[in-house]
Image 1 (cartoon, rainbow, N blue to C red):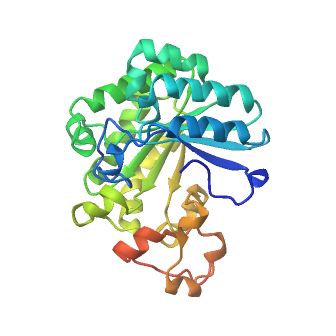
Image 2 (cartoon, helix red, strand yellow):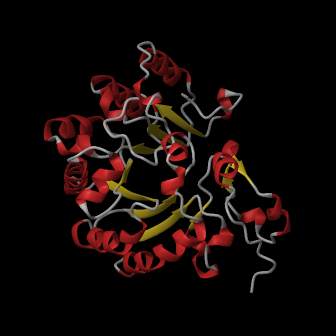
Length: 297
């Protein structure tokens, strides 16, 4: 996917720039499949550049994503340069595993092409090296990600840490929060992310899935540790019925509109209009528990 699927290019306000399928990790809960990351379209980069040239300059927000975008190397840097030059008043986010930023030569080349204020959204799966690496299925990925985050923070980059919660890391959320506070106190925010059950996540659903309410319950202490330390927190992809009322302000409507579905029981919920709903893939694969909110006290 190159754009966000809007019918008229003049109506684009938030777009996705999908750089490459390739990734140097194979995360067990990734919504992309291992097979899809092996596909390579040599013409894609030129098509992407042509698409960028045709975009209007008033796009509000641009998400640069993949795969792992930085693996496109020189092409990635050229694309970022194009975006930086054309969209000088747009917001930017780069979805990356952060490992490329551990290489100082690449880091320095990358920083020269980054738009001002770009947010680096980087997953840190656990504070324990062996757990993180078991999730990415790449030995050494934890150390590279930690080094990458540290390097970016040294350059005053805006770093968002994402913790995608599954059965593999749910028991370490408190420790991971403490780790972030100790080693990365300068991060912009930390987001706890509920899984999108596609690709690897769907394939491994029987060993990974944890219901939303249980995820929130286990995340509460970690949230308090982070907030108390002055680090902003959000909850991504959580229905409001799985989150205690006092924490609703943290629950972002983070699912892309065309992927949102509601369960039949949601029709009975008084807060459906402000709830972010469920991924259509998760609804089909897992049939998650729903607890309609009758009234808000």
